[in-house]
Image (cartoon, rainbow, N blue to C red; front, side, top):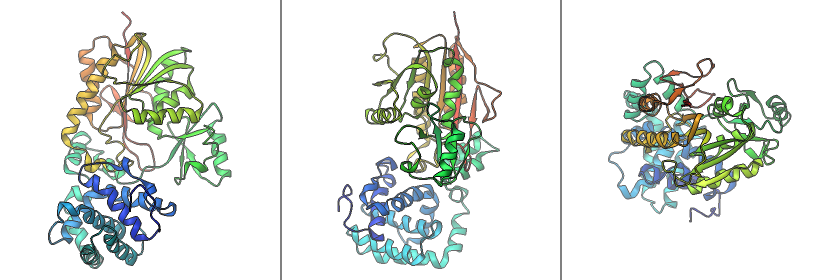
Length: 444
């Protein structure tokens, strides 16, 4: 059965086999959840497929520990799909409301669709043992704090070192799915009126505490049922990410037609928010041409216009030579503040990646600063909670950049001071983890 073609049936075995196939690239460090093809199963099974894949990645350190305790010996590398099935089965038994007989039977039976009928007996035996000895087996593996908190050791150590008081709350928030938050397009509606439209549609939510355009839904829904979505009245964007427009407001609101750069712009949420809020001439660049296409799609839906360029923000060949009044640098980062939305980070990210990312962030800061006019503003942002990418990065930049001064506000109600910036931590039922630092270029 082709992964790109919907199967002929919608059996529980088929969706579990599809989940195993989708997880193999992640388990073998060959891909990510970004490659998940929800159309590999029929429509009614797509939400289950996504839950199986995302949920398994979210709980992966604990699932792996339990799998190791259930197996007499590990599966061979060529049977990573069977190993993925075992993880999917454990996830169902412990974290989903699927009847145990279905979780066991359909998962074991899915091995036949992978061409490995021999594995049905192994999977059946492991999952039935977990049913019988669940409490005992979980208690044993949870003696390891990394397993109990479902994080790789390097990351839990980094969180503990950086945030001695908050690390456990950060880890616990990472293990729960993030809420669905909307950004109301003020060109069409205010958020109070839009919240009323949601209520009339049978959708409940509440106004965001910090983002003035934000509404968080009580329960996520398909965007197609959001009032006015196709007409550009609303977008999906986390509350923390929405704060970038408010932080750039003092630089943009008094300067109609301001020349603005959104570097590393994909997928375009912040790009669109700036255009919704301000009368600006915006250039948006990204080094990933495919993701740049998503920015174009977003702007088209919202009826907004920007100059989009496929370009490397560490270089200047793309630049016209006209200095920018303001620059948004939403820098590539570890994503450690958005693990709950991208749980495969737990498997794919490595400790050594942080140093390489910090090097790239340094290159971006140094290059883009030269494109900013005197008196202009640069807003540095990441969706990381690690100081190497945030406070330490900005401290080092300030030390080598004498014409930079800090204008990060200290009187806001969100986040907490971190070096010369502000750090938000992922909040259960609230915003993602994010860091912001606002800098102004001295006028000579």
